Image 1 (tube, helix red, strand yellow):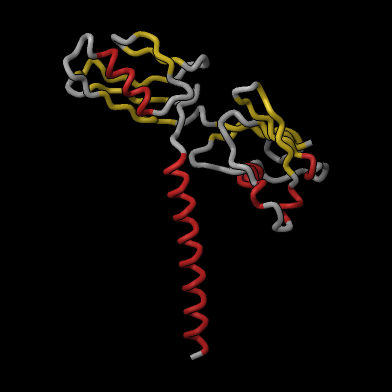
Image 2 (image 1 turned 90 degrees about the vertical axis):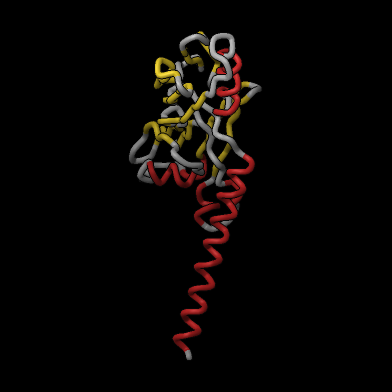
Length: 191
């Protein structure tokens, strides 16, 4: 009877963790759409038009070039928004074009870690990631790191902002809401 209670308790905990995980994945998918970034690789094709199938990399200025449409702004837009614009531009040349766009490589969806971490550098986010996850990928801290003086530098519509991050709060299980979800282009500075 005792072993049955242990199994039941363990199963309840596993189901709880799965439910929480599913909730966060679903809520992210419902509220956030992936926005195209400079450096991303897109596969664009037009149904029944073999000459209009291309793999394109989004340029540093955020644009792409595609036959018959010319240069089109892609960065900061969802795949659906870009697809709609390409479809509109192609209707001049093709009756009812069916455009497909797939993000083949989200190489522009990157953050940067610098300072007192074991492996500073550029990290491509293939899924939504927070500060703790990226610091883990960077190998953790060097012995000289000022863990409570970490700063996240982020570009926004007003220019740039600096977000303070105190590692010890999260390490102690406090301030979990301050484990910020990172955005493409963020720079994490660990002094």
